[in-house]
Image 1 (cartoon, helix red, strand yellow):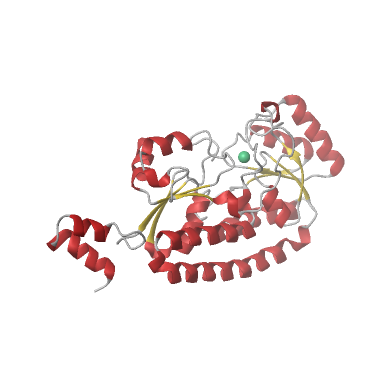
Image 2 (cartoon, helix red, strand yellow):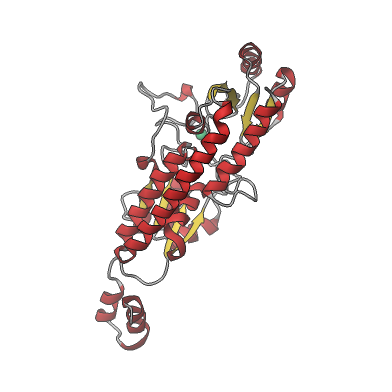
Length: 315
Ligand SMILES: [Zn+2]
């Protein structure tokens, strides 16, 4: 009989009282799947890769939602209350909605200092870390560096490793399983990255603009150049004067592709596209942003497919 079975047997069967409680509270050996809640769908996808069938993973934000602003529903609280592990993007991406949910969950494991709280940003390469003082005048978001780091496959690998280590810490008896899953994921990612880079090779150095600064890690990995954002500052909606500046710059610099996250109003990007002859590409930055983007690999497959089509159409 496995220890987990024995534990269940003892708890529900024969031995009441202190002995049974002691057995079943043994850390790292509990029966059942590890319940993981993630702030975003990309973290859920990575947690699923390494956790396999020994975890239950659920994301609070859906891939088609703006991760800066997620409406808190009561059902999230229930999920957080039961969670063994909460994985967050960090760098204040979720500052507007997650902290009250964590507090209200009353779950001591997933409080910021708890054993079941994991800030994935600690594992990733973070771009745009501010050096000077950060003020509100610089915009509403990103005061600790750019939180959209999951859009670099190497950061996906690093975060997956970090989650695997945390799962091993929470359940050491499954260490070999989690490590094996990470190794398989990592190998597949190496192969996929090679293919993605080869596909993007003809377009290295192409200039784009983006609606929000969601893409610096992505653009850096694929050798693309960002020339600006439609938002005048992070989190600030477009203004006519900034849009006019962008249009002039794009004509001058031959910028022909605009990346637009699906949750922003497409009106301004579409009018910029009309003025400049550029292509506005609605590009999901997260797993689940479109029905067919069901895992971390398909996110890059899908986005690169869109991007290549746009580059080919605007030589
Ligand atoms: Zn952002």
